[in-house]
Length: 492
Ligand code: AMP
Image 1: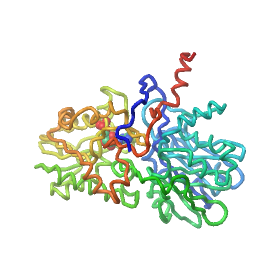
Image 2: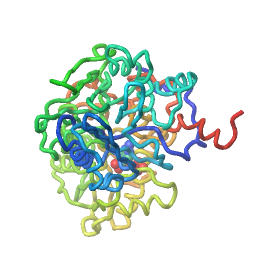
Image 3: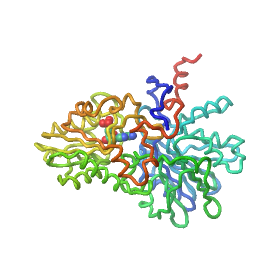
Image 4: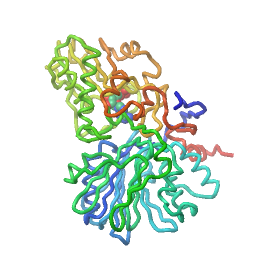
């Protein structure tokens, strides 16, 4: 592991005006069930929290492949009536996470390409750390790239004759890529599910009606009434084609250390999902209990910033004995969109999303439990609304430790200089937010709340210890920088 290993990485603010190749997403695969696209559609509904920028489904009846994709929420991207155009028993689906900047239609997944061996579709969750150098290599050989996503490199590798004609093409291809990836790939007659050897992102396997379902989170199986079988193992390829599914390990599966993303538990996953073998709600309850133990305070009421703060607020209340109430009410028709235009609009955006129940807050000493502080700007706006509603004291408890370092493996955090804890001490953050007290989770508290050993998790955003070395420019816009510059006519 290398601490804070981001040296030499180019930062180019001018490039922050376009869309981003960083993929924080939800993926789905269905094999061997007649209405596969419809199941994928329903499953993607359960994964909508993992991405709201775009959605897509690709299906096959064994002979031909059809796809539907669009920008926005699933319901906007694909109309239920369009599912009739996606017949067949194999499907993959994807929801893509939204951050800032414009959206590019070409980046919508699943990516579908035609190459020498037929048509292949791929849906990817995670971030590849060597995509840029591989892309440069293929570009120098004359390959043409159509998207600015890191995922596209996987299809170029698949099309490369040295891997395409190998004994195990998916295994050979996945052995070339580094970083975080849970993915599903399909051709006209088979489906492949795979997870990187470090197991950064979740991916689970279920059974339904004689067929199989693969999904980023197990809440999909509940919705589809599928039976959860097991997680796809780190470094495992599961291939569904003719006969029983074929499972094998690839690349450095046995030699790589586990680096499961702990932030899935804190923020990203749904509380009703079982991630890395534990129900997310249970982990969040323990995080809240830890906060009550570490940061006790005399107060009248505890409440959460919904939704990721709900379970830890319950844990805090149970452990402290301070009554739990609903201080914030969330408008569920506003997406989980996180990065909004800078400046004044932020506080009005917060008001669109959250309102305060004045009676719960007025004249009270309140403990507010939120999952994390990233830039601190929306957090500050939330505190402001509590003060406006007459809160006497505001004590903020955060179920994550201070986020000090960017994530290069698929969680969309800004650069270190935009992370408030990357720049300020806890006391300075408390002062900036305008709260009476601020208590963060400790890293030790966090690792005791999750199953398995500390070493089996990636804690890079808190500790700066990156389990997979990052030597390339991992700026979100790295792969469209050339395009941008070229468009302005700056290239020689
Ligand atoms: P801020 O006040 O700008 O630091 O935003 C903090 C809020 O952003 C928290 O309440 C989290 O729920 C949410 N959040 C944390 N991490 C992410 C992420 N990677 N993407 C989107 N939202 C996030």
